[in-house]
Length: 433
Image (cartoon, rainbow, N blue to C red; front, side):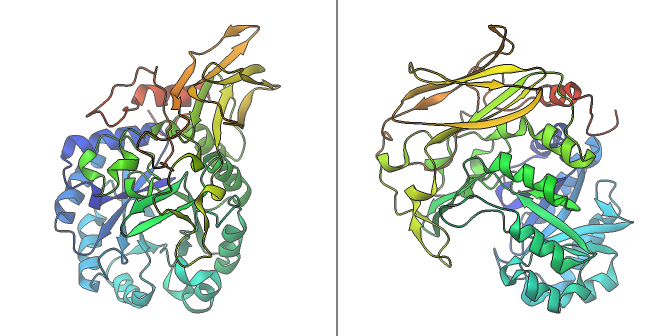
């Protein structure tokens, strides 16, 4: 179970920052960071050294993911040098003694990997998604040990399905498949201004993971703030790309980590784990999509048929609960009447509630026999129109009344203790100790 981390967003990181992120990820059940590096980033060596040092001290794993799209291709010698440098680290994630390695694109340099493989033992799962699984099957299977698909979001006015995942599995035959899971996608920058539907996808994709049963799963991403699919804490203000602050600042996502241990345990064991402690999370946008200007944002990427962004997204509050017994779940927007759900059995429950013109703070409660069983989850207010006139299509995912501490005013920091409590509540631990 991996999540991609953009080293390009860590220029200001020191060893303590790496240790903090690694502890949070490990407590959530993540096994390794896929360290995405670009060819011309001058602080790659320093930050990789910091990352591997921190991971070694904590007992966490890492692997390199070479980004051939961001700043052009890597030289073969550079790839070999980096892989050899970190191969002996106890933090290097390996399969059968070979260093696990991936890419973001780079299909035009695919033949380089024959030379690379001859120089250092690797277990190679590239993302060469742009050409599709059939082209991959016909021409590249002999170069790889498997493949990673970046096809994590749906096109247009639809939900993501597992069709593309099954096509990749079929193309790969007996080779490994790494399935992508992502909660969101929205960018509004001069170089990138589109969205794909997120909405309830964080829950839906995990159900598809259980159906597809891939060899590996990679979450996109830990810290790609510019594309709004970060699941790590918003404490690295300097890592937010220029032009992205207007839709990223004060829009935390790290409550998506709250139920992640449950999904990971279900994936690894093949069965839904028992729940012994009640838990709840909620996420949504902060205003109706059509209430403000889109700022030029469209639905779908430029190479796909364009649709109205407001038709793609759903004006709803999405929520997930873990309950140890049958319960009543209520979601209230402002002072309006609450929507109430009877959860008939223990386990995971997911649903959503439409805005329907309602505004105000969001409150999610879980009760049994008329008594609250956990503190209410309190969310930021939904407003009738965005204060600056522009719709922010990013998600808000937090609990304003939680005891997590804020850092630099950019968002809460999830505690390792709170994540461990989720694991222990399922009588399951993500690692020994």
